[in-house]
Image 1 (spheres, rainbow, N blue to C red):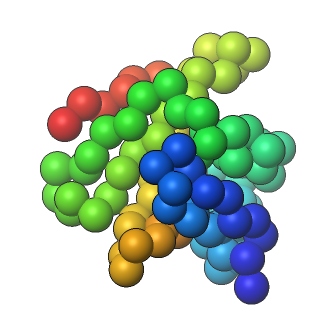
Image 2 (image 1 turned 30 degrees about the vertical axis):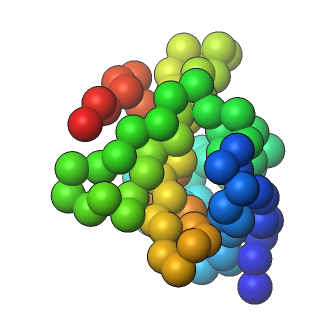
Length: 99
């Protein structure tokens, strides 16, 4: 079951599953505040400020969007498999990690 599915600017479908949403927002996670940023996560995937590939895994792409009220970037990490992608994690960060 998906929380949402969007099509990014390259035409690939990206989904956020309930399991991943629970992982991101659970009280035991490092970022339960993300429950307030679901719409911003979608917007980050649709219109990112920056995209970077992760060093460890070329199938992982980080989408960044600056959130003014927090003075931080929202990072949404997506793993691509078989032409589509899924959100692996999401959180706020002050740094954009370039490859």
